[in-house]
Amino acid sequence: MTLDELWRAALGDIELSISKANFVTWFKNTTIVSLENDHVVVGVPNGFAKEWLENKYHGYILKALRAMRPEVRGMSCVVYSPAPTKDVHYKPIDAAIATSARAHTPIMAPRTTPTPQSETNINPRYTFESFVVGEYNELAKAACLAVCESPGHIYNPLFIYGGVGLGKTHLLQAIGNAVHIAYPEKKIRYTSSERFTTELIEAIKSHRTDAFKSAYQKIDLLLIDDIQFLSGKEKTQQEFFHIFNVLYQLNKQVVMSSDRPPKAIATLEDRLRSRFEGGMIVDIGKPDMETRIAILQLKLREKNFALSDESLRFIAENITHNVRELEGALNRVVAACELSNISSPSIEQLQQILGDLLASGKRHIVHGKHVLNVISEFYEINSEELVSRGRKKEIVRPRQIAMYLLRTELNISYPGIGGYFGGRDHTTALHAYEKINKELEQNERLREEISLLKEKIYVL
Ligand code: ADP
Ligand code: MG
Image (cartoon, helix red, strand yellow):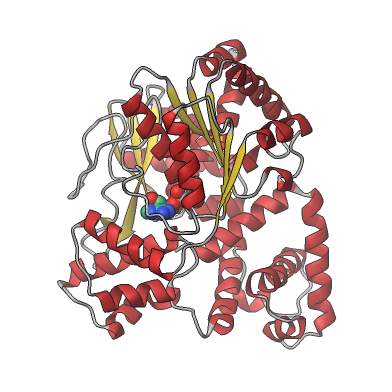
């Protein structure tokens, strides 16, 4: 069986176990890059897919692969971007990620960086040195540094919250790296709450819950990312609460991140919430212009590439949403310059390279269409049908979600939204907004769906 056949078979399996929309979103344009030392490296189109595949679908992927190759032990992803010519299939964008956790050798990596340690899940690339500080995140960084100085004693637990792509994972990982250097004997573990849940479910299935818990209870520093995904998972919350309490009583340090503050996480058990609130809570806002430029400068140094101040300013002025987007835009520029051998792109060239990312000024027009495109692609429906008056159930729902997102994300007026849908009356848009908004309170799946869509809207 070739790698290609193996992946195709695994995809067939995965397709049956997750929703179609998610399957298309996350598994389109993926491939197996290598299988070495029982570790599979999957090539994905962007950093975002990498994160989701590694965190959310890790279990599904391993299960599907093991059905055919039982010896497979691990899986990680690497970011690839399709090259413009036909004879070269892919070009690695981010060599830092193009490394295999197991093989300890970079795969097709022109710029090499150390590999993540498989046991702790800490990636040496995320450090405090490579983290740019501005007013928007200085408190968060200071709290993280304080934790590193005396883990378990102040700010326990530390809870960091902020929107997507603003550096939460980076900070958690940086704590892991710094503590590892200062206290090599300490047991450190980074995990996402999704991964925690998957592991727990696997442990329950194989009657190994006690082993699972005692492994966690030996940890000195537990870094748990994206805690909002615990929302609604009662069993997982209970187990987490138990582990958390044991660690807390032993003065072990716990650091968590979330996209919102504890009180805004729906269905978080009260005792868990009050524990979280008993520690230190810091938020990360959005980087200002100067910080965005500083971030671009740092990333350029890391890539060993130079761009003029004017180019940097142009990128920073236009890509304002979050750091991940900023980094994605820069990657795109560097890759395009390298491919076409340009050392100093003009503003016109930058405009062309960044194309759809440059929405400022005409945000509504450009982004409104973009939102509709994301929705049609996600639900696999024809974009004309989406804005039509057809009443098919498969269309009506995505249409309501589209109206909701146009309102919440772009702040478009209800009559304005009606305009996108063949001049419908504003009450239709209002009704759609209210319906989805209300349903969000109850419906966890819808919440996840919407947050997936938002991420697709904002991430490259
Ligand atoms: P989050 O976990 O909040 O969604 P990440 O920590 O994954 O965001 O950050 C997204 C990307 O942006 C990462 O590659 C990270 O290294 C980078 N990044 C975020 N904030 C900063 C910063 N202040 N300085 C340097 N890089 C940053
Ligand atoms: Mg993160």
